[in-house]
Length: 315
Image 1 (cartoon, rainbow, N blue to C red):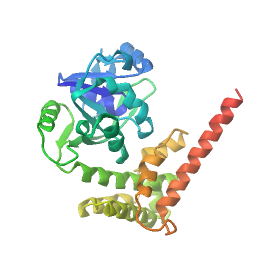
Image 2 (image 1 turned 60 degrees about the horizontal axis):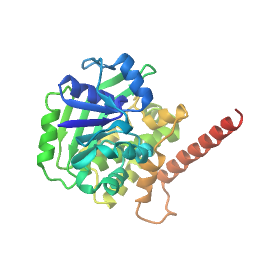
Image 3 (image 1 turned 180 degrees about the horizontal axis):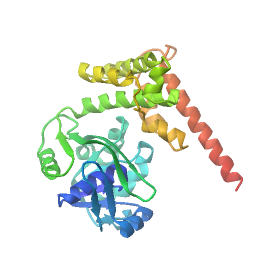
């Protein structure tokens, strides 16, 4: 099975390195800057679960893709999906499966509209990783999970083939017949975590110490109600785990969205919070903490855009 991994950043770089260590046929689709970096230093992963150094990882630029791949792994930010789809379009053939690891649900519609629903699988990644200034992938915890499945829930030959390719690699791979349910549950979780930590500008433990854990729980309930209205109510065990996480004293848990805001980076406001809010059933005038979160994130985006324009005009 020929596998194309779109990007060699934190997510793609980590799982791609693990697959290459297991002697799988993996190629990274990268931009020129990352290609130069890989050519110079190779692909390096630092992890408590085992380091990796791939001296010459196979990689290709978009304009040099020569034909279709069997499986394409996509893990970009949602706001980059449109140009990302164009970058790997020539790698999609009649039998290609596209396995995305984006947050929310809208990306499934976008990929299906662009390539056809028959090509698109559901997938989610659970890992905390980052890329440092030298291009080294830093695995920040001991979780490294890829879950995947058919959107319709059936077990298919291509899911079995993917499972065979993932087997033996140094990460936890899990085929599931309930991938859409799991995607909704993750969406509820990250919308709550990203929303409350960005709004309060604090870690979960900071919010609890401020006496505002009830706000985190209220946001969790609101996001869960939206999922339920769409037919994907989070399971009781998932909700209980979320309630414990969002009220834990001293917790250092936060969201990448808050980190992005603090460093002045782009955020997935529309994709994680805005799209969820748009699916809310009821009057727009009803009290909504999620709406306050969304307004806060959009105000940040407006300020960021204004400041970038100001900086550009003063050059």
